[in-house]
Image (cartoon, rainbow, N blue to C red; front, side, top):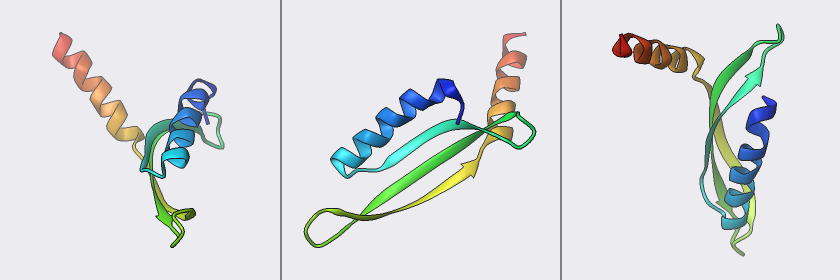
Length: 79
């Protein structure tokens, strides 16, 4: 995970765990070649009968091209 994203993501994760609520965030992950790509992560806690978190069900989606297209569109709109 990109160093600039770690603290923010840790806060989001800790809040989701403490409140047993949806985890939803975007962050950058380093690829094998050293570059970073944007990912969207979303998780939902599955609760046990006693209300504790039994497990998390989630998905992590590569959204790098979408982020790049949005940034390019902003540049075009400014010109």
